[in-house]
Image (cartoon, rainbow, N blue to C red; front, side):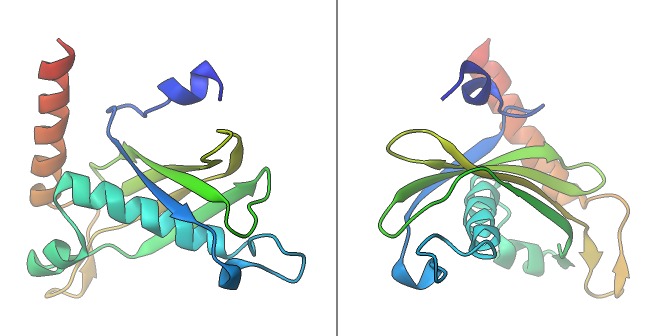
Amino acid sequence: MTMESRENNGPYGLFAEAEITVEFFDLDPMQVVWHGNYINYFEIGRRALLEKIGYNYSEMEQSGYAFPVIEISAKYLGSLRYRDRARIKAILMEYENRLRIKYEIRHAQTGLLATKGVSTQMAYDIKAGDSCFVCPKILADKVEALIGEKASVDA
């Protein structure tokens, strides 16, 4: 693991990690994780980040918003295999106008980067049935509270 990757926690220093074990049903015929399953792994990291923020999918819905994914990309750098342990890191990159999250999936044992990617989600007002071009205040308040806590701990 490089020093740069250890310190790359985004502009807000707000991230979450989750660890998984690769299951047999995640593999393709070549006995490596099928490329589409890395997107599922991103979701595991995103869910951990949203839990840390205090704005999980249930809380989004209760506040009247959904956040559909509008764009996602992945770059595959190495393979994960059956029973490998993998660490998924989800890093908050943007929250004011859209929710943008960067991902790193590493072999837990070696720290080698297997996959990286980015997802973008846009707020959608469920009641109005319309897209929002600014994230809801409830999300901004929760993120800013965490950023403020981190700043006071780092000081």
